[in-house]
Image (cartoon, rainbow, N blue to C red; front, side, top):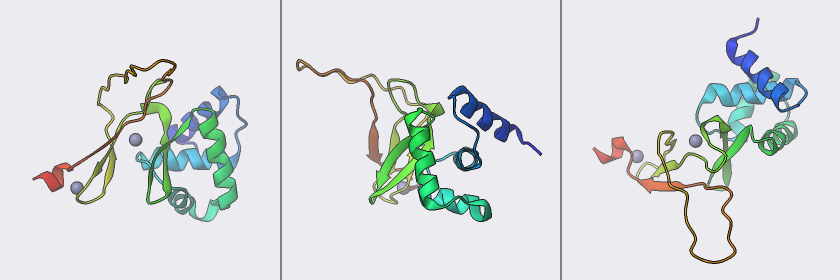
Length: 141
Ligand SMILES: [Zn+2]
Ligand SMILES: [Zn+2]
């Protein structure tokens, strides 16, 4: 049985010239299903029984990041959170908003951010990643 999501994941790998291995498909499946940035630990938990070991998950993530399929969204208490890169453009990732009250971090997918301008010689911006802080709607009400 193949769900539309699974079919899409195998196409993602095909387009990136990556072999369709079970660990790669499983990690993509976990990230797709979560739809929010998740940690390596959460990926492993999502995969439960069929979970490839931690080293394999690490290697798969490194590979998918190199191909631009997955992004390291942000770090929190020294833990990296990963997400699919399809909501990001070539020049920038969508911003992530962390609530200073409840510490929740969410993706802001519809924000339009102008690319930063540096008024000093010699810098060339290739990619912009913005982190925002403030109060989430719950804490703000
Ligand atoms: Zn909050
Ligand atoms: Zn995000």
